[in-house]
Amino acid sequence: MPILLRVLLLVFSVLSMIFVVRRIRKSQVQLYDTTFWLFLAVMFVILSIFPELAIGLSELIGVQSPVNFVYLVIIFFLLAHCFMLSLRFSRLEAQFKRFVGEDALKRMDTEDNEEKTDEYTTGY
Image (cartoon, rainbow, N blue to C red):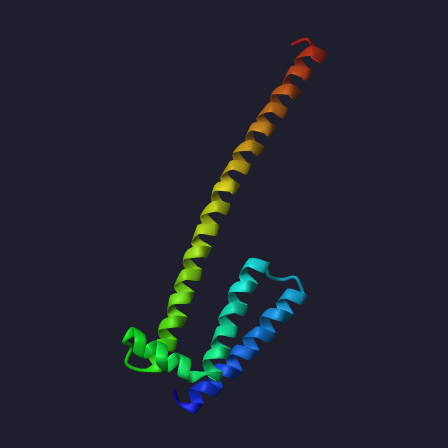
């Protein structure tokens, strides 16, 4: 792995870790999301410090160069994270629809009770 790539990977990994930790301190991100980004940053720090690991894994898998292996790992983890976010979004959308339906039923019930009260007080 070229030294320039190692240095860039190390610098951007450390910067992303600092960025995520700052967001945690400001409570701007949920713990679920931060664990993914911190794990990814730590993994890249390890790969940049120990490039032999990337070389060995790329040879084991059959990827031509360690740089391509790093790109492959990045793409894999981002796609996996995207899929997990899609699942979370679908679950939240289903909850939202359920809450909207429950709220509509409560409002209808409240309006029916108000109409009945009006009938009893006015006599019509």
